[in-house]
Length: 237
View 1 (tube, helix red, strand yellow):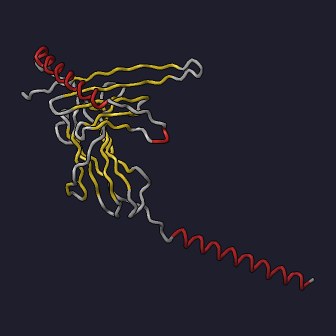
View 2 (view 1 turned 135 degrees about the vertical axis):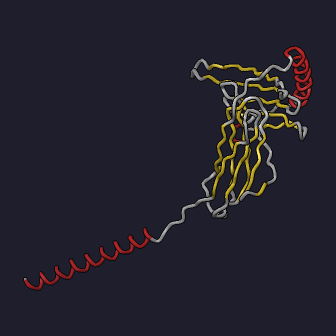
View 3 (view 1 turned 60 degrees about the vertical axis):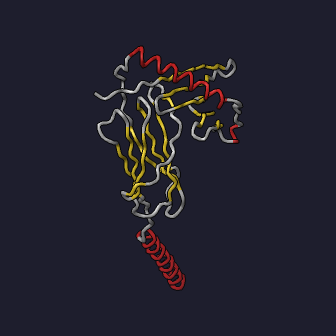
């Protein structure tokens, strides 16, 4: 029987209500760990504000400049200390609950281009994986059935139902006929889940131009014929 990993995740949610406009905002805080994963993130209204990158050993402010982003000084050091607390809690929980069977939710995967697709114009393919529990998931890409270098994943983001979602992005230059695939591996799946995406850009045909040309020609002939008969009629008078 496969040994199940036990994951510890904590949420802190706070609803802030404006008395004037009656607008409700929701802050969220995510701290989680397992034998292989570390997660430390802050956000508001479903948007990420900050996360700790434990691979590069830096804190990352994620809002763009136009959003007037706030900064999070010393949050990376806080994240490191909280990972130690999380691992301690995880070890205690494993001993206390003896690795109980976890509730598992299968991921749902979709793949799409970030911008409108134009041949030879650089774009980004996005593989969105959502509705899964527990983390982690593994995402891999292929182009024309050839494996591509694994791209980094975004942070795990919580859904309202307690599951998670995550993104993987792949820069690419569309060429007619190329086929890309995104494959997801997760503990709840009996086999890997693969979605494909094909470069298929509609090229304007000659039909519309021909019809427009014929219509314009007939219209000009009609004007010419009408003018001819008008002149003949005036001459008869």
